[in-house]
Image: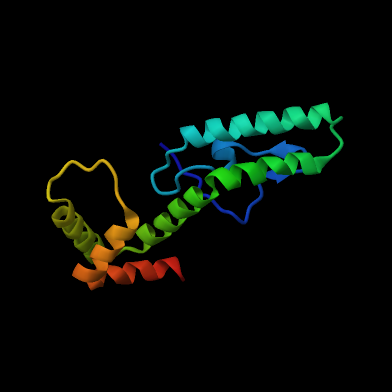
Amino acid sequence: MGGVPAFDRKKSLVKENVLLIGDAGRLVDSLSGAGISNALLSGKIAGEVTSQFIKEGGSSFSTLKRYEDRLLKEKGSELRFYSYSRAIFLKLTDEDMDAAVCFLKDYFDDRIVTGIEPIALIKTILKSNRRLLRLLKHLVW
């Protein structure tokens, strides 16, 4: 049990000759705390970039910056999505949670869910429960 580091795009993953990977780099799903696959991916990319850095003589720190660039190109939008989701979740009231649970219960109608199409879900929310739409305002604030 412990705190979950929240992703923060404003904080760099590279400082001089140090690369932050996994939890140390806040590369986790900021909502659930999941992050094993991100830790493995960030370690792999860090290893490749570090190897290149050493081959080049270890003098160009711009080579190390490629780690952050590559990782965020591959995972940045996902990490930002979870960060935004966490921000919304933390602002929910009990009434908001009740409305969301009731909506999802009706929407999925006790079916087994193997995937969610976000755009279709948002359209359905707009058509059926405008009260839930106000939760989206937290994305732009």
